[in-house]
Image (cartoon, rainbow, N blue to C red):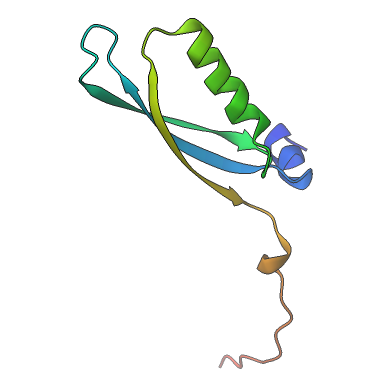
Length: 88
């Protein structure tokens, strides 16, 4: 089994974050960065770790972070259907 499938079965979903940060040399300008990774809601340890790295190691100060999260495997995908298709 591949690593992505293992993570999904453990409850991980895809988190996508739009990070707005100030340009180091021009603080009035905002730049956008898109980050995407498998993560666990609602605590988001991977995203928090990345944002901590950003604040400690990168020059552009964070302005804001918007994110969405979606589990790829969930109970809502499975439902019982009754019906029949007849093909010629």
